[in-house]
Length: 227
Image (cartoon, rainbow, N blue to C red; front, side, top):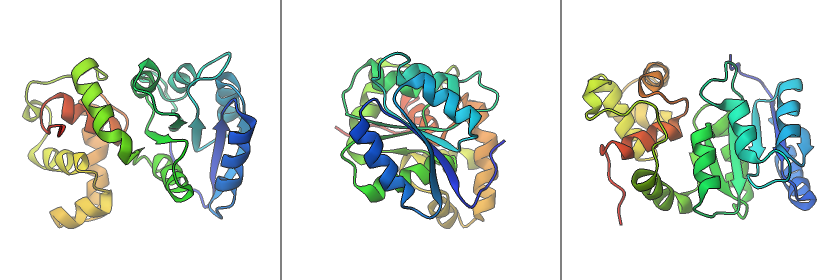
């Protein structure tokens, strides 16, 4: 069960020592973030996340030994009873690595050249269950997921088959990139009410993260990918 902490515990997994050092310095400089391990492969990432009770793992995808997709599935796959959220930080390439990580349960994606502020913000968002997707990836990722992939075990012809009208409203606003605060203001509701709706909605869609709920919305034609 996810629980609030004053300091979030972060594991970094990347096979490049310079990248590990840079992320460790960047993330560790924040007063509410602590890097508890920096490792070079997926197996070490899983072991560290479990043994050190991590709140989020920053995961590269292409690593020797156990790759990032396999490690992500072990940490937050559909059958994992106690998932640890994963933020993928990678060099962008529309291929099986990126989509495989989403299918494995990753909650967020960033490019390695993202600004420091974006990285630390994404770590906090993923740890809190909000998820994130680099703006430069959004259109291509969603277009590829819609046209080439099925990531969810539940696919409905109409969202009304699964969701209440209020849940549908929230899903559509999620697909616009809104935060819980934004959605609450738009619908004139309390943020706690939005969180309660999300907690009920995600299992109905067969997903665990807000990011995968947005992909579900695109896959089922509730919203369209421009271009």
